[in-house]
Length: 452
Image (tube, rainbow, N blue to C red; front, side, top):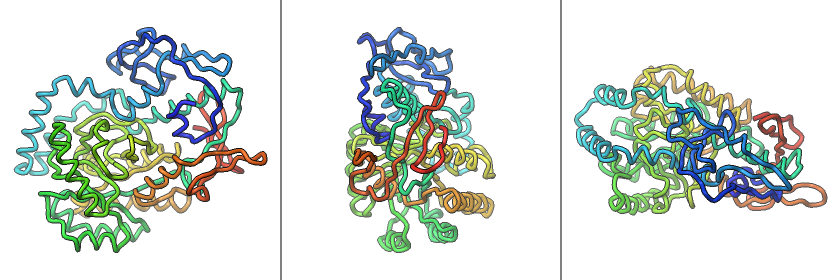
């Protein structure tokens, strides 16, 4: 079994061999694998192209299945890793790297002297034509999830299986999961945290607060203790929130050491970088348990890209909880949309595909009654999903802990029945994946099927 597929589903090994054909692979590029999955990686035959908006070859037509073997014209492990770690964006980052780095340095030098209105205008200029970007898919991208399903379906066909058991994604058979997070960026936002906790509590939610350790505001132990005592979570938010964390390797390593110290000092388990700047290939310098810095689709972020999945995943030893919903700053200030419609649309798509609904709302942008009204609509909708649709609503650290537990669980056949082994197994549930047209149908034991 392919390791990424096994990690995603936690299913028994169907003993199918995957091969990627010739060792002579092309340079990395874009191609399709079915109508709804754009891939980036090397392939046989030279069909990958440099731009995702070009006419893309569908590699699915070159799949072969014979004698418990699936032959693919590309390396699926490499493709999935390229997407999860956003390596498909590397060639764009390299082009014009010096000019982009210089522009970013000038912007963050001037930023303290720019008002919100001017900053928003500059950000809109930078993000212009975002809605013409063909990949990842807006407003939610499921490419990695579709790839995992398609690869498991091929393995099932090769093994002659109509159904295969796996460990369901969420505890107690929850249909999906949602977490609410708050990045505290400035002094006014810090002052609003108490009121924001009151709002969250009034809808029955506990959330996480990401705190900037240096330069933005003072971080008193009493402030942190107040958050803990009320049952909320504390995480570290960048170091200085100056856009420089990933700008240069040596400086990054120095900052990572200080971030690791603040993680210990705050008793934190999680992290989110400022402005969602990120480089997953550098995560091995960090000592936190989980990260929340990689968006599902990043068209409206200063660093574009996206991990193309709605599920948590591992980046080395770090659990990544992707940001799957548009953050409030983008919605209110960049899109100028003071409505609940985009959030509701994204949440519906993620829930229907059993994923992680990650909410990021800044206390700094909730200071007006108008913004608070929209946020309360969001919480009301999430409460309804939690109470009526069996959506799990934990703290982020609980999601990361569950994903680590699930990653250690195994399905074993005992007395003609599949059972789950491993710590936390009492919360886990056996589910089944069945082939259905071009996709899979999921069902929990003794429940109806859900087509994905």
